[in-house]
Length: 189
Image (cartoon, rainbow, N blue to C red; front, side, top):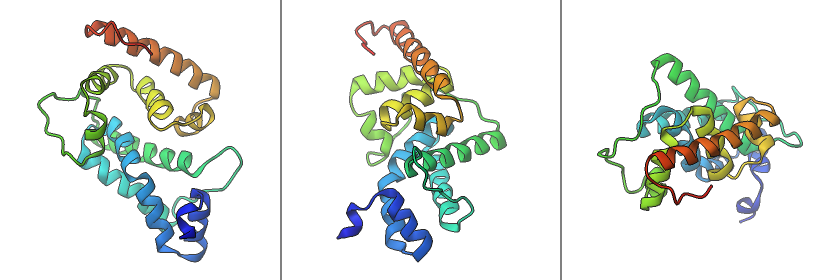
């Protein structure tokens, strides 16, 4: 199957120009879990995060937002920016503030965050992330969990590259300090 080896940009163009539903489904399969988990970092509700992920893909499917293939801007970066915008609009409407993960909260075994939170060290890390500023949490997530480059993170967060580097440095420091406050002095970041 040649479609499996196509880049995200090629799949998007195939969907957008030819109406190829298989190409769109493949993009959805590639990014639904990681985009949902990214959005979950904002809204703290898996149900809302899944709905916002679907809304992000609906915007793409409808052509309301159009990706422009440009050098230095990947489809993934653009998709995460769309998801970020949906999460921010949702939060503005709901006027939610960030809340820490409830240790007694039930997490579905097949949910994206279940895989990340499976180990004790990951749970500790997530708890530490939940206690730092949203910008720090977002830059750390995009950099380390989504493997985005600083210029891609800058596009998603609508910041300059210098601001991304500053946020990354401050975020790592804030996370380290928070982990130490929580009693995890062995943490190396």
